[in-house]
Length: 336
Image 1: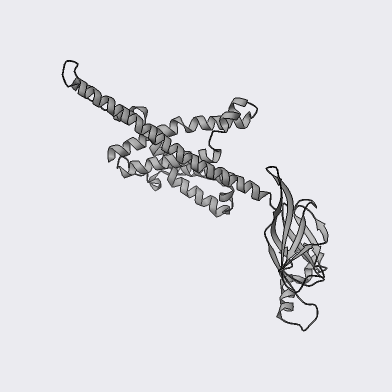
Image 2: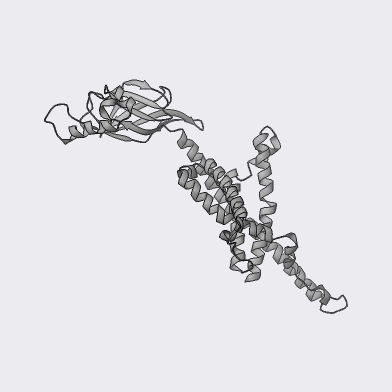
């Protein structure tokens, strides 16, 4: 079993050394010289940069894990480092985690806690990966062909049998190595397709209008609603409301890419109102109407007895931003 694990570890090391560096080189050259036709064609068959980064992080960890399982090596105990080595390890881990955190939107959504979590993970992970990369060398590949040639003599009758055994073993090892590479490439290809599809989806979603907040959340017909967000466009979209039906467009006082202001329409019925933004966009040659997320408002009656909803309306004013208060005719100093 240990020998099989040794074979797998060596193949992982060889795959990393032979496959990943050329792909990275092609990607870098094409990034800085996209006009070179030869690299433009090759780059279409090259895994995405995100995939290459994940491969460069995953395979050393897998190799180190197999070394630990086979008891060839022991895990690196980070806290036994001297202070200088520990600081150096932490600095490198922080720099890599900062790059990953800025590069990947999913990680960036975690905020500062996510950055620190990645950093502390790399503090423990990178020494194990370095152990794997430093343990293997080209001379270790001799285990694939560990034949005692001293026992093979030309004049002996068993030479043919041993020759064919050696030939069969060599072909079997080469076949297994090719099968391993094809299997890994298949896994990388499937993972790359998912990563590319995910990044494409994120780019598509980034073009959607997005409402971060809207206020006041409780309104009368006399109020003006302010929507804050991004990607609203510059008067290229429309705002629609929905209770149970589509009411249609709303007359706007202000429309910018990050802010929309409109008067609560008189035809809105009291109760819960759902608002979203729609913006036309061309995606891959198709004209689409992109919808934002929805925000809800509570519309109160202006007639009738005073109730707890009216109290809630004035309570919320203390939590509104100065601009929204001013737009609705209130002095922010009165609601501190």
